[in-house]
Length: 144
Image (cartoon, rainbow, N blue to C red):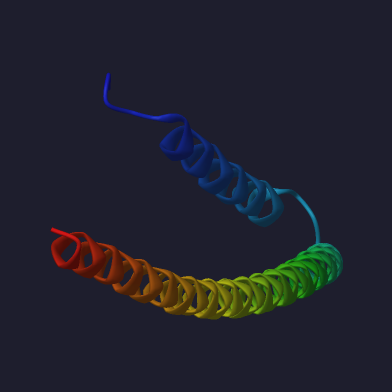
């Protein structure tokens, strides 16, 4: 008996109630017509209660389904909006990176041109300086 749970107790009580009610109806000192009428009324009442419970369950199920659908739609919309925002951010970042690379490339080309001009200028200066030194050296050796 220690293993009996609440569910078993309720089922047993329900079945016992049905059996007891049936026995009371069948054993009651009523005529057949009255008994059939009572049984018919009990069946109609049970049918009405079942119909009410079924409708209530259907309505609740529909409400839950609609709520779940609405929440799913809202979540899908939110995820879509966030995805679009993320894609836009990535596109903006990629455009900025392209601009930065282009700017760096232009700067490198300008630096290379400046260095080339500097080397060219230095080459001329060195060439002139070497000629001058050669001339000075020639004069010194010719004067001796």
